[in-house]
Image 1 (tube, rainbow, N blue to C red):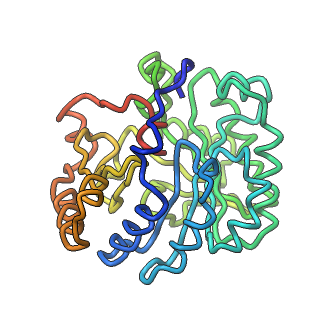
Image 2 (image 1 turned 90 degrees about the vertical axis):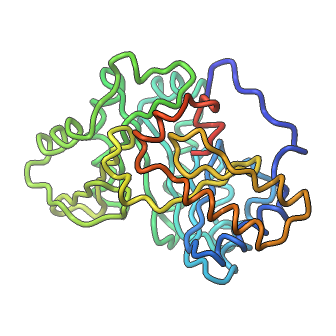
Length: 298
């Protein structure tokens, strides 16, 4: 989030709950079997629990997941689980109080950790921590994060910094690539074992005797693009077929013009047929007009 904030759209320009539910249904009819609510911060949505319940009951949807900063998670975890949520990813880049305040410009590390402990006590099928590393800032915490997996069935995923922050920190030499992250993991845990993970988890490791797992996601290197089958719907009703692409396909306008489900489906298909070969090809097509991940969703 830029320090000065972002210009939030008026609510009239955002999808309503009913419009979001309709698009979930149409996407499910077209083969989307996993729904993830992300952000910004999805727990701020006043009807998120209802949307999770709707998605979990939609024919064709096998699982519903959530990515959150975790600040409000402790109070909502039980309601989300009862609504049908299967998995939670918590974005947390440091276990150090002062660094947390510097990153987020607010207090709250203990709230996030309380939320993590709460969801680990519930029978979610998947609980993950997403950690973005920056050289000479938090990369020395690799071992601290891995130790969280010793007793808990938790997956900690180390993610390359992406060029979607307002100050373009990734250009300052703070970037830490996937290969260097793996070297550090193997240096700290020589007996680490490579196991299979999801399509986006380029490499996933298990440490002997540990309950959880450790993953690496090369989000900037983009060596995982060939496995990507994702489609992103922004809060203002646009389809983005790649995080690095400027192309957006306006489903909200179609809905509000009275379009049929068939016409909306054809626009979704058009968006996916225009999906670039990979993130590098997408980036060459133009400059990002949503400068922060808070405006893209993620």
